[in-house]
Structures are given as C-alpha cells and as structure tokens.
Amino acid sequence: MNIIIRDLRFTYPTGLEALRGISLTIAPGEQVAIVGQNGAGKTTLVKHLNGLLQPTQGSVHIGDWDTRQHPVSKLAVRVGYVFQNPDEQLFSQNVGMEVAFGPKNLGYPAEKVDALVKDALALTELSEKTETNPYDLSSTWRKMVALASIISMDTDIVILDEPTTGQDAVNVRRIAHVIAALRERGKTVITITHDIDFCAENFERVIAMSQGQILLDGPANEVLGQEEILATTYVDPPQLTRLGLRLGLKETVRNQEEFLTAIRK
Amino acid sequence: MHERLSFYVHRDSPLHRLNPLTKLTMVFAFILLSFGSPWYWTPHILIVLVILPLSFIGRVQREYLLTAARLIFPAAGFLFLMQSLFQPIGQTVWFRWWVLEVTHEAVAFAFVNAARIIVMVSSFTLLLLTTHPSELMSDLTRRGLPSQFAYVIISTLQIIPQMQAKAQTIIAAQRSRGLDTQSSFVKRVGALVPLVGPLVFGSLVEVEERAIAIEARGFTSSHAKTSLREIPDSRFDQILRGALIVSVLLAFVSRLWLS
Image 1 (cartoon, each protein chain N blue to C red):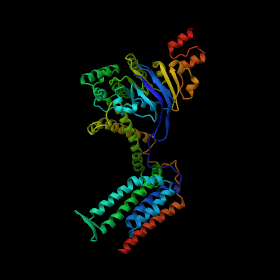
Image 2: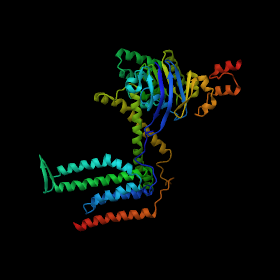
Image 3: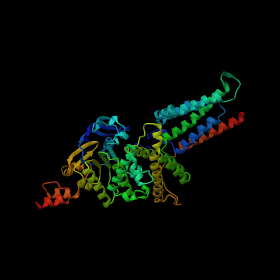
Image 4: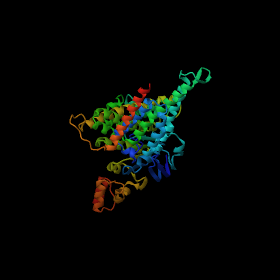
C-alpha cells in the first residue's frame, strides 16, 4: 500500500509550525528510518499517517484513502502505530488479551483473531507469557507486548516510534528480528529512531529531518555518508561509517561486512 | 506541548510584582468585604471599581474577561435566577407564575449574592492569573507554612495538566489500535476501560517517582532550608496589606455598630 504525502504542512494550536512542506512517497514493503534532532517533526509527521493529526495544508494518502476522510479507528486497518511508551496503552489482565484488543477492534472473526494473536506472540517471543499480566513483566518485555499488540492487527503499514530506547542489546536484536520478519511479509515499516547503529543495520532507506523539513532522503548508505549535513540535525553517522570516511574509502559503509569488503579492495 | 502548569500568565505588571501574600490578603479582603460590609452595593462597587480596573493594571484583562464571560458570569447568572425564583422571602410580590413567586426582596437578595460570588471567583482568578503558584507557595513556606502542605498544592496543580496530556496520549494510542471513541454512547462507555487503566496506573507510578526524586533532595530533612528565589516584600506591600486588613475590620465593626 502506497503512502503519498503532498506538500504537508502542520501547525500546532500553539502556533508552532512543526511541518513545513513535506512531500514523500513510500512504496509498499519499504523499510524506512526517520532520524533527526528532537523537535525536528518526526513524530508529528508519522502521526499524520494514521490520522492522529490532520494536515493544516497539503494531503496524506494511505493507498486510496485520504486521511482526512477516515477516522483513526478506521485507518487502524491499514496503519499500525506502536507508541514510544508501552505504559500508555497496556490495560488488559494478560498479554494474550492485550494483543487481541487491536484485531478485535478491527472486527475480525474470533478464529482470525486467535491466529493473529498467536502469530504476533510467536514473532515477539511472548508465547510463554500469554497468561502473564503485562505489568508483571519488565519494561523491556512490556515494550514487546506493545509491539505484538500492533503486529496482531496485521496492517500493511507499521509505524514504530523509537522502538529501541532503553532496551538492552538482546532486545534490540529481537526488535530487529521482528522488523526483518515484517519485511519478508511485505509490510511497510517506518521507524523513528535516535539509535543510528540500529538504523544503519536494519533500514534500506533513511530520511533525515530538521525543523519540519526533509533534509535528506535516500538509500541508507547515501544518507549516512553525508556527515556534514547530518551534523546540522545533530545526527552522527555510525562510527564505522565515519571511520570509513576518514580512511577515504570509496563507498560509504554501514556495517562490518561492508567495511571489511571496502578495505580489502 | 499542551502542558500548562496553571492559569498563570507571564507578564510584567504592577500586579505581578506585588508580593504573593499581599495578593492573597487582597483576595480574602475583597471576599470578606463583599460579605461583611453593611452597605448593600459593596460587592457591586468592588467588581466595577476595583476588580475590573485591577485586571487592566495586571495586564490580564483579556484572560480575565474571557473567564468571566465563559464561567463566572454564567454561574452567577444561574445563581441569581434560582434564588430570585425560589427564595421564599419577602412580601412585595412582583409577579406570580404557577408555583413560583418573585418578590422584590428575593431579587434584591439574589442580586447581592450573585455579586458576592463574582467577587469571590474573580479575585481568585486574578490571583491565579498574576501569581505563579510556586512563587505563592515558596513565599508562604518562607513565612512558616509547612512544606508538605505546599507540596500537596503544587503537585496537584502540576499533576492535573500532566494527567490531561497523558490522557491525550493514551487516547491516541488506543485509537491507533482501532478503538472507536467517537461514535455511539455505548461504544464510548466501553472505551473507558482501556483509557482509565493506563492513566491510573501511570499516575501512581509517577507519584512514587516524584516522591523518591524530592526525597533524594532532602525534602523531609529537618534543617532549615534556604530558597533560591528571593521574593521581594516591599514597604508598599506591607502598607497595602495593613490597609486591607483595616478596611475589613472597619466593615465588620460598622456592621455590628449598625445592627
């Protein structure tokens, strides 16, 4: 499902102009990371994708739907949005019920809900914790529950708002694994992140934002190589990328393999 | 983004510069005067000649008049209507309708009561518009108010907008999961559980974190604490407070004298 954003502008009621003319197309199945300094407008932008915010000017289309013409609860069929803080959405007595909440809201029949829940729990390695109360889990696992509760909605587009903040290495790998699985299923994944290594390792396309505008948009290697431009929005490329630049390698590298291949040439 | 600590409007005005205690004294003096003065028109005069000009002096006239138009006057008007219609006093009947009897005395009584309410709410509104709550509380703690008491007031003022912001986020999160909060009444009631649960739980966690944070900074320490903020208390403030107290005393004495 295509996402088409045309000259999107958004001003908060306080008068703060958070988005100043964003035009963007995201093709089905793309994995996109959005980076940029705090206050660049990243969250404001993705909140437009499921209608939580309405454009002040311009338009946002999800497939053939204009977000202005559909309520958030309808758009939830197409766009799943995992909020940053799991504690702001978990309320059920156990993990299974929590994860079933979304698909039930979407009106799926009981068997389909069961299948979706099972699948989402397996993907997030929560299967053994189905009967646990989410608040008896550690905050790492609560984050996974929040993630599972969106995956179970089986939307074509999944938005993750800072999935790796406060997570240990093991859980970051778990999240990366989930994103890879979603990619295989042909889902579009859009992630806001400050974790530049996570961004470099898991996303093919990177968008850098600054002051409500898109600074850079392109393949990860291209964007992450623009050290000076990224610096204006307080983003440091991954250490290996910077090292590669310093060594004068021809290609921009993102990970160890790329680095080693480039240096052996 | 939509977080707002209080009604406080940050501006520079003579009213803002007054010592918080002076403003608090003023509020209570106005209320006592409007209830205690023997003269019928006192509250009305206070509204027109004191409170209204004060809102201009404090440069908060726009905010004050908005609050007055939206809240204070409708509430006082309602009170006036109810008391005029249902107050069973007086002989001078103006008109009768069904079981209702409107007398001159009831209307006069309602008119002064409505004005008193306006004085009461307006003077508090002016206080809140021109005084930062933490400034009021640190001034009062400096004068001997227990800091626990100040904490309760301040944290309540802070928690309300924080809870509002939190509730907004929770609503957004649940709507993103397909929760319908906008259609039928039944659906809305059903939608309450997923909203209230995280809100209550989150707030409890926050209260605990806040308690730990302030205790880490020696909140319950019995040593005398100094304050970073110096709140000026000028000669003018002291004279004004004295004058307000005297005027209240005069009002009560003259009331006793006349009765």
